[in-house]
Length: 345
Length: 235
Image (cartoon, rainbow over all chains, first blue to last red; front, top):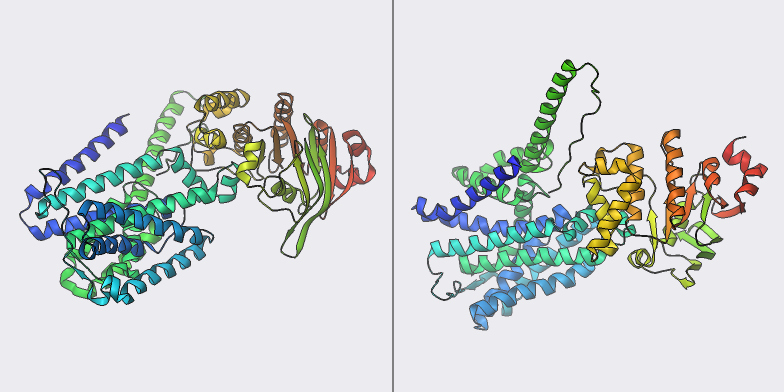
């Protein structure tokens, strides 16, 4: 119970910090970087649902991110659609394309799924890069409008955009939390565990995998849409493979298959890469080894390492209490150490 | 209740089972005997829909179920309890049980009822309901696997080598529980290498050898059959 209260205070503390942050700093660059980090987090949550909880590592996520961004760009700039209508349509377009690609991609497994989606991601990039008439090719799309005002709220200022994107991030976290702690979430974890076993329980694995694939593309698309109207210029680069691997890196560093992982990983990497900015591209010389060490020693990322440490500490406490009890009463059974439940997610 | 007619299953060009005939009547315990690789598990996989039959028919309550999806087969009342105590090791005992009732997921009341029933059958699972399934002992894991299969309220339960890797005393308990489940109205098809224990509770058996049935008969017949005694009981 104490742990729960503790957790709740930590979460509310972070939300409060995020809410007052624009008042703490007058530095608009910091605010800009943080807003961008929030956008990445939304996409990483999408990747986490699929790769972390269901065990299907998709390398096409930058592609879906770009599909979301370009859909909004084209619908607002070229078609001249109402902003929020375009916003919604972009998400629907991303989901439909996700569904079609998922139908084929999910016939493969493990490495083959990763390789297949890697190819899909690259094809999406190529289509965007070469389809001059629709996407503007290498020149990209310029002049994407900021989100249209809702009632008295307008999103012209960086601060108000920050809050809008924070709102969508919190919405994403809430949705993922609800999904992971529902039967659907457990179904996804069951599929990650063993697909054959899931089938013998009567789980329609294809249907569930397709659902989680579409959901994860929805979050990637949402991130793309927000990116397009935040940066207001998009080029084919946003669909390139490096973006996929950036997202994957945020996820791995934070902790794959954990709820807080995407936030921790993204903030940390963005912060580190900003502070190493003075080294220019040489920063990768520091970055690479750090990342390798992390993955070797903490395969479940920072959050995974934290949980491990917590469980070990509790186990030690229990052992100590047990030994004390043992000294008090010689007859107590030293073997009856209660097993600790490892919480998924 | 369940009838296999000339069933063949192949993995690529390798024929795992060839035209076997098995009949399970309602309320029976039927045992499939045979060494590793004889085709018992493949037969189970074909019945539960994980492998498609190449030839022949699988009839359940008079309807052909060959080629149906595993999910629909579970819904129609056949549940497989896979070999090797396959569980979700990081989920808790109660979460594992709830996953077992996946096909009844809309009926929360029924799930509560069946979970209570499983805890009555295996009190140790109730004590450990919050523990991770992976932290249980071998015997407890097997109980959990059977309990999880029960959660789907099967008419026919397929048990694949429930005694594998367990201490003799635990094996004895396991077979008692299987008999009790059977008495409560679940028909059981059992795959075993431990012929002595299995034939003790079964009414009839089939002996598999490299993909075909070589001997069949009632438990008494098999126990007195010389070739079966030599091969599987060692007397």
